[in-house]
Image 1 (spheres, rainbow, N blue to C red):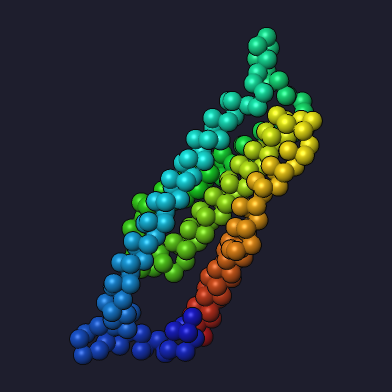
Image 2 (cartoon, rainbow, N blue to C red):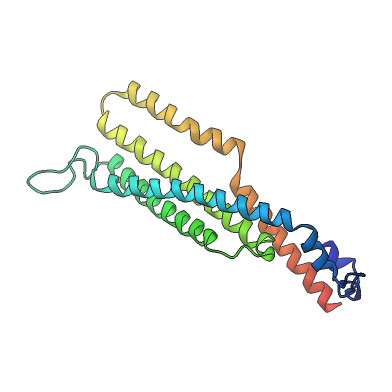
Length: 204
């Protein structure tokens, strides 16, 4: 952003004694940093791909092994029609969709070329969206778990309330320590501001 608003265009094309332009010199001097960034992104994407795949497998299996089982005569779930069962199905579906989306995002990151320009906007955005979808899938998974407990422990309110309360703790702690949504919004505003500055530089 500073380069677009302060540095004259002619200086961007100027070469030093080694015949390198400012951008080329920057790339050469920070080659190790770029390699470290590539390795870090790969490791992060690989780890979250495994997590997302596990959630996909769990949620897919949970959809066909519903709480209480199925009616042997009709083949429909025994708890079908109850509100908690409706919550279970919706949460399970959302978790499956979110985790599947996360796996696709991180797979795309793993298959990218990791060029220098990707680290300006593309890679951070993909990582943040991938982590955010993983977070959503975990939240929905815990909601499905709580709904299943509500169905199974119907009538045991004290046990059910205690278990659900403890189940919500990891989500609350994670959200309190790192607000991923705020980071995504901040990054989007940074990208938009950068594009506006570049457009103004071209117009002027």
